[in-house]
Length: 113
Image (tube, rainbow, N blue to C red; front, side, top):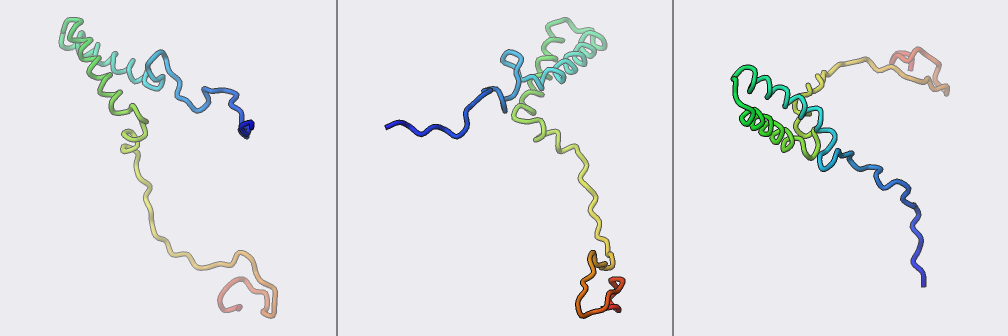
């Protein structure tokens, strides 16, 4: 007895997967470059530290960013988006369509019905 054929056949196995650059997720590359630049500016430029401390600052910043945003940046970064301002408003009722029956056709005001 043969097994039933699946309804769908996989054409591209990478569809729906996150792109990577080697073992690193590609959405982390730009923030890592920014963190490395800031750590270079702080370590070598302002504090006049040697390369070991500068690379340590960069590694600390990169690892912190990776831990915070590893399973989706939206979980952490969505906290900084303003929430919408909801307001209650009273609007008089207006009919979209007028019903043509036994009643006379009006403007939709309550007096006409």
